[in-house]
Image (cartoon, rainbow, N blue to C red; front, side, top):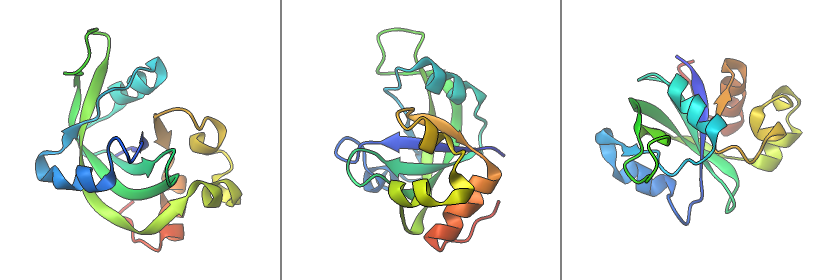
Length: 141
């Protein structure tokens, strides 16, 4: 299993909307960055990710699971753009803000800290555990 971070603007697609999609999940569509698209191509069913509210809130709020591997983005006019489907698994014990992440020495190399604009990004197993620790949540990692 690999770990990821999925960024969403909560006024466009929020954690609550993701949760409302239930077990079937939802396409993680609208990604128009080649590096983020290529990360989605690496994803496998069962991979986990942080659901991160960007712009408003700027915090990891929950955990999602990849439930469908990469496929054409149904909302894209160009076949080069692809997406995965994700479903909500659980809300973190508390939100972990970007400021907390940036000031935590164990997260200094995290992609979110060094390339904050990338909308889909990898998370290491150690980073996964640290964020869960900060959130006061258990992890199965």
